[in-house]
Image (cartoon, rainbow, N blue to C red):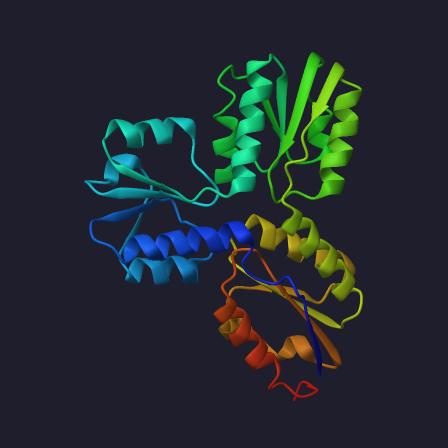
Length: 283
C-alpha cells in the first residue's frame, strides 16, 4: 500500500519544550512533580514517571521539591497554592496558552464579558477561565451554545489554542450580534491550523486514515473528527498494537497523521507496522 504521512505529525513546539524541560528537571536532584499529566500522551507520561516525574492531581500531594506546570497550564489558584507551600515552579506552560491567559485577564480587567471558545472540562480551558477574576465568563464549544450567550454591552473572545479557525469565526459572528462592542483575539496556535489543513488534504486522497495520539488529547480527537468527515475509514489509535488488519481490506492508500502530543517513536512504530501490510484481502 502507498502510505502518505503528514509532515507536521507529532510534537508541536510547546509540547517539545515541555517534555524537554521535564526531562532536564528529572535528571537533577530533588523530587519533581507534574500537576496533572504534562502532555496528553499516556506513553510519554509513563516514560517521565520512570525517570522520576510523579504526576499529582492536587498541589497538597507534593511534599517538597518542585512542580512542573504542564503545557496546558494550570489555574491561577493552583499557581498561588504552589507558591504558598514554598515549592519550586518549573513553568512549562505553552507560550500560546500563556498568551490566551494574558488576553483573558486583559479583557476581564477592562470590563468585557469573556467568551472562551473551547471544551469546558479541558485543563487548558479551566486555566484560562481562572484568569477572569470578575467571573463574567461563558465557555462555548460550538455556534449552537454561542446562541445562548446573554446579550452584553461589550464581549471579548479568546479561544482554546487547539480550536479550529472556522469554529472561532462562526462563534465570533454570533457574538457580534449579541453586543455593542466586540473584541476578538485569535489565540489558536498556528501549528493546530497546519495540522488540520494537512489532515484534510491527506484524508481526501486515501482509503484509510490513521490518526495517532492520546485519547485524552483534544487536538488529536479533533484531527480524527476532521478526517472521519472526509474518510469514514478513519481510526484514532494510541499505539501500533491497536492496529487491526481488517481496517485495510481493499485499501490501496493509507494516510497517517498525529496529534501535537504524540512522541516520534510512537509514530515510527505505527509506520513500521503499516509498511509491513500488503494489499489485504481479509483472509
